[in-house]
Amino acid sequence: MNRYILISAIAVAAITACSKSQISAPEREITFQTARYMGGVTKAAPADYKDEYAAVPFGAFAWYKGVSASDNADFMTNQKVSFADPVWRPEGTTYYWPKSGSIDFICYSPYTADGTNAPLPTITEDSMVYPAWDVAAHPDVDVMYADKVTGLTNNVRTYYYDGVPTLFHHALAKVNFQIKAAYTEVTDPETGTKTKWDIEVESVKVNNVLSSGSFTLNLNGTSWDKPADSVWTPDGTTTNMDLDLTGVPNPLVDGTVYNLDSDVFVMPQTLTGGNQEVVIKVTITTYRDINDGNGYVQVLQENGVEIQGNLSGGTMDAWKMNQNVTYSFNFAPSLGTTTTDDKDGDGIPDVIPTIVYFDPAVDEWENVIVSAGINI
Image (cartoon, rainbow, N blue to C red; front, top):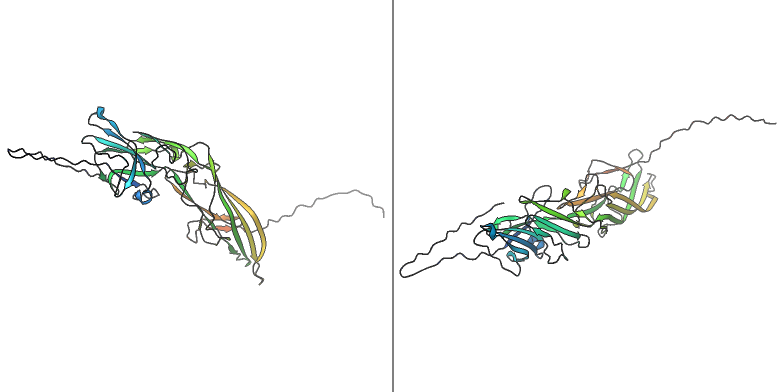
């Protein structure tokens, strides 16, 4: 973070026998400069908060630190801050920088007066306590908190504006869901037999997702300590999601990845050992061409097949705060083996279908000795 300190010289007026002049410094209004942390594997530059949240005011708390500790005072208490081009400024009240001392700031987003439209955290100088919040009941609310800023004496430019540097972090997680056909046609090199499948997706459900909980942030120096494992404390409330199949054709086209629901806010939660699962319901029609010149012939139709899978996905142990997770459901129409190959380069491992073989064996003869009299 670059910090620019403006040093001003105050000229003392000279008094002469015929004139007197006075020079005074102008008032300095407090404004805010906002950004939001992008997260990700590589650390990207923070994005301008205004890009997506120009119409989303945030709340600010501030404390004045005087030259003497006895001068310390609350300066802002849940002050609404809105965008008034070209600055972010407190709404309804104008604040000016004091001549002495400094000010500390903690902000949260989005602003709420009473906690009905967004969670209203209890904020002290070293903690932020968020009450229970049902994410599923408020699917469009992006809960965020900002780094604490200390010792500020004037507006500065760190991100995009002149004002209090306000870097927001996402308190929720986001999930995205995709589906593709692992394959729809194969040819056995040994026999030349061709097999193809039509996969018709009837529904995709994500069940038993924890939706309501709370969390606490404690200040550790100048940064926040997140809750253990970066997950909220759930209250046991769950929700089921029916994913959107609007853009998914029937049957699926081989090699195409289809988006279901994207950028869905979810409560950060532990997945390992949990009941969160995906249930995919499909109809699978199997066709076979035995190379006799007659082409494909339908040999099997499986209706209403339900495939279930746990969302922990082996290495995915949790949806964590500020994480954006994408699930790609690679649907194989028959039993198969997942490989480490990715021949089509879509980032999803290939699946090889399992051919039906036989395991013949012969049972031993059962020897029976019969003692019987036969009259001829």
